[in-house]
Length: 122
Image (cartoon, rainbow, N blue to C red; front, side):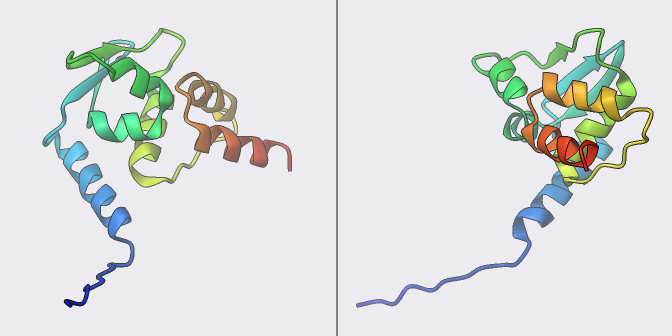
């Protein structure tokens, strides 16, 4: 009977996501473009769909390469949220906190919404 070899690399998921973020910043292998007030944000469809129920539903059954967000979403908020999807980190100024929370809620990114609520009510 053969024995099974178990291999586990600590932080492998973080490393892969970091590589995907580098690719995004370089515009490599991005398969979707999100338009926000005329500004294009290139990204990986799988990363957005894994981070956001909104994007998962939006991409479902569609092979379109470009999508436009409503005018209520600002480019600076989306930039911060997009960065969060790739890094799990976000620094938000007090003046933008409500807009980022609103946008994260609209995009159905529960991690931001839950964490933001924790911070706002402490």
